[in-house]
View: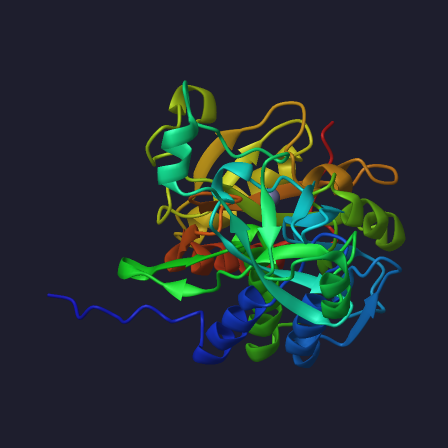
Length: 368
Ligand SMILES: [Zn+2]
């Protein structure tokens, strides 16, 4: 009987500590800078140089002098809320900042990021007793116009003293947690797990002393959740020759999801590769060959007009940039308890890493 070889651990204790602090930090759309600072600090030892753009997209570069440019990319922003209206008795009504889910908001704890630092608050919600007593027909559902925050302050003056203002952003307090069987839970793994995975790819390249025949741009883009805006800006600036994008995709095997519509993808079965017009077929073939050769499990899915990820921004930037999307399966997206599996994190990092070691400026990506 063969002796089972212990599978090489890709995620070290140091990287897990970084992931925990990165997830526990708030990085709301348009206000990502504190997360970007954490990320830049982490990747600095693994890259030759770093830079940022006017809206805060952060980039680490390996081999900055090479003319052929390859991007690995994720987005740094997390969905959140904006304070929109303050009542005379100090309650706060909100506006979405990205596709934050109103159905999971009631009774959650949040931080309001005001002028004097984070202010704790809760999403108030009427008690079951008063709800039932007052309803003649059906129960109220949470909606943007009936969801409100309570900080404990009872008028605008008290809120002002706390540094809370119209336009302050609001994030949930929930943080990183380890569950059974290699599962992690947390808010906004979408897509800070991507920022983690591209950083780890850079770390492995450095640690294993790999020389790349191109410049590698490790890009953590802002403002994906409001229309792929950060990627749009940075793609124009870098003008890459190839882009490998990573984001999350739905695990569709949990209850109440229609597989006929959403396809079948499950946590623990490896990254999902998307087919779609924005995804470059030859680059996708190369990634699939790499996965087969390296025995990395992958799942397939089809997207239509757009991938809904930064892949679109890179693919259609400049004169067109061959782009591919490597997604990690995620349960309960845009809730406070997003879940993913450690083995998928490791497989996605391995797939990006092995793809980078296969790709060269001479790789033929011509369609015709
Ligand atoms: Zn998202």
